[in-house]
Image (cartoon, rainbow, N blue to C red; front, side, top):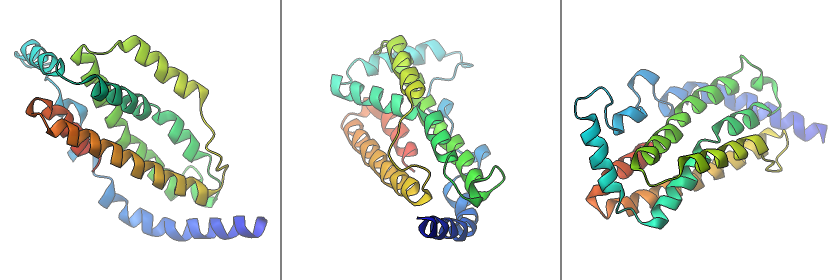
Length: 197
């Protein structure tokens, strides 16, 4: 078993250099990246309350199924602290605090955090969701943690992450296609368009 573990760590170290070179290509600079407030009513605007009324009016027509999917997606996205801590447990020399994989992990987490923030704020402003119950569900999910059965094996962890990210991408694209069917769901379409980039 030690032979395979050593070889897997060796591959992770080898990939680390390429990953660090490509990180800026796939994880956009923070100062130029979209932020949740770009898609929500501007709280500093004189039209803020009017914009919320328009958002709520448009959200009234969202189907029950679409709202349920948005709730599930929001809870999943807000469990980000669990995912970050899970990735931080992967063993190997490049997973030390100043290693390349930990740098990637922190930058990826910062990028991903925006998705849950935007969805949460949208659902809150929509008035369609009992936010307290959703927040309780999110807190349970994070507090309970999870075991995906990959242990500290870097291969298994990153293979799982790749499939999980692909599944999330497909789910978000399907939500976006539902949202495209009606112009008044434009905010949701934009959210998913940027979340899946």
